[in-house]
Length: 174
Image (cartoon, rainbow, N blue to C red; front, side):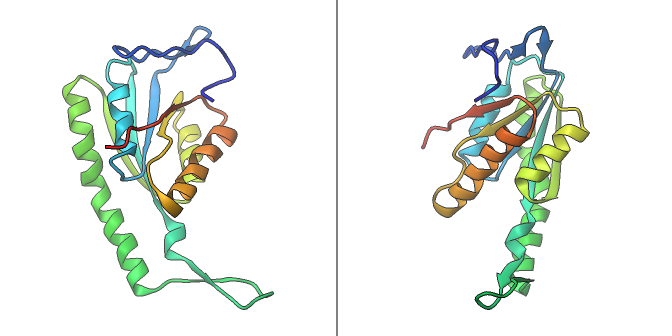
């Protein structure tokens, strides 16, 4: 669901989104690091947006392994290998986003790249509200298997709790 309105339309040549008289000036494109999620990017070209923000949230929940006994509380535990994988991903993301941003800039878009740490669904919503984003863009199937369940729930959470219009693109499997 994009919004509780019929005043949304999509044209292959130009992305134009409006609700009433409100045009989207700032769009937040959420990426998860997968090629499927990157398929949202061509849909941003020609949209007439004032600014496009490419956001990658490095999920902090993957570095806290809950360990406990049945019936007792779970205690988050971090291993060195989990921390290393997390730090490696965190350090790779600025270059990853800049690589994706350049073709958009070449097409005349004003693009900003942002890497944050946190729980993706909550971090996306918080960032969008704090930065006065008008529209959130997300791919619906960036991962497969268990990661799909997690990312699918991220999309669902953002749509249900974000309080902002969400452009959803279902990527084509390559």
